[in-house]
Length: 185
Image (cartoon, rainbow, N blue to C red; front, side):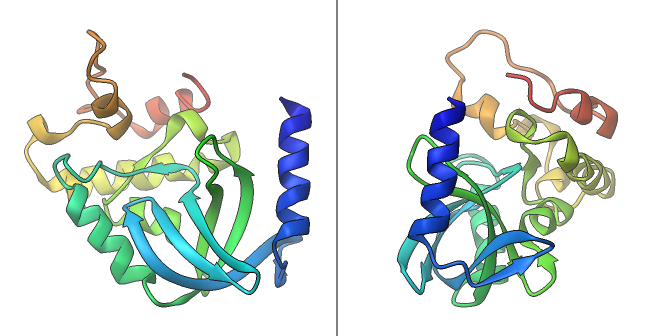
């Protein structure tokens, strides 16, 4: 697994043109040409097109309540704009997972702040804990998906696995609960 991640990381650096650096992290620069859904975009880099899955967030699925609004929010932020991408890894669907920046704005975090995304606990790192605080603030302020009725509040990862009998109730979750769930499956 570690070898595969290392090969993937090295492949990303070798395959894609590294345009600049943000705090010593490799950064890819390109233009967003398509917003697939609320947490996935297509970007054209100097080396060609690539699909990017936004790290640390999960948005409602298109058929889920607030799914279309999340996609529209991401479109308003980045569609047809030049962005920088801080790559992390390649996921099982061959998408590059990364953080997208529009100037100095961390788009991933902005979607959570605006209430259009959940902090994706399963794939977050401890250093991403601030995303839980942004989610908590959006929830308390009833922004975006948090403005709707509580019966529409279903985490996208829970919505995708509806076939399971147990579904977690996130309606009273705090930032501390979110942080405690980071990296757990």
